[in-house]
Length: 411
Image 1 (tube, one colour):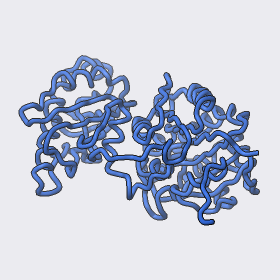
Image 2: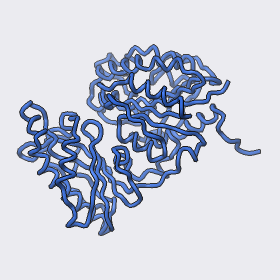
Image 3: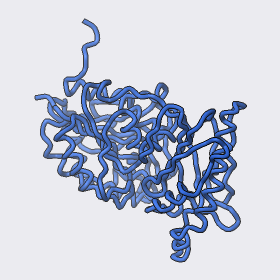
Image 4: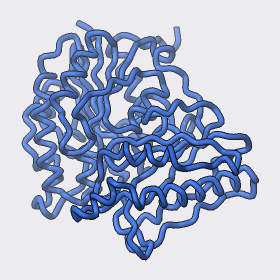
């Protein structure tokens, strides 16, 4: 029997290093994961360098690699993909940025780069859209709120470049930086000037917005500054259906992942109640994925909350959320004629509070798959599996072969 469908589940940042708070275990090794362990026991596993050994992947470059779009060939920056995911239709020549709603104090120092992981920021985004005017610079813009503290900005106009720096100092207790051109090209200077003016005007609007005034009264960090980074010029992507001959959807609360999916031609399926954080409605996400398999060949589903716990250095919270994930995945065990692929996109060690180059676990379970002797889904156990050590760009060819969609190389 050969699988007809593919559910590609990316557990964002779930891989880790030994945590002191967990007695030297990784959160994944410390968690109780009977569902994931069964998937491993009934499949073939390995470890994977999503980009290459020793390379710390971003979620953007790793997902492109996992979908078979080598980032060295297709990656032009995170900003355009983030913008696409928030609903900004990016076309050639538009310059995209990823943004954070952040908090600055009365002295102008950044006190929280994520504004207390603020959510419900659409009123703030609407005020920015209505109040900022860059017409004197000959630049238009689109700005949309994303999940949680995230947002995206796109600049439109003649003579814009994408080689500019960020205003994000990447730490608290210091002033935001000035966006600067990274080359002598006048196009980059024009973009830098537009960015700085956008930041200035939006900051004045956000400072006195009723939502932020209320947050201050409640003792919460206001989202009174926009940190922008990840500049890029929107690239061109061969469409997924043409590249592989299969239809597909993407289910993700993270706007970046939705944007990547949309950029390559996957249909984005919004799921109410999913947040990209540890409070996300995972049951709804799983139900949506199963529903999509009824009409599509391939479903990419991203679950992100473990990554946030890793960035916050919260090993116990990460372990506990992994157990929540595992419970929500139980309905997947009943899927028929379906290849289930589970992996991380990168490691996010609690000790580092950022991505690392550590390889991630990967497992494939379904009809026709050779079953190895591994029976535990964690970083060390999967390393003993029959897939051995592969690269992210290897995964789609393996998947296509297992669903009998690959082409013979040679006579």
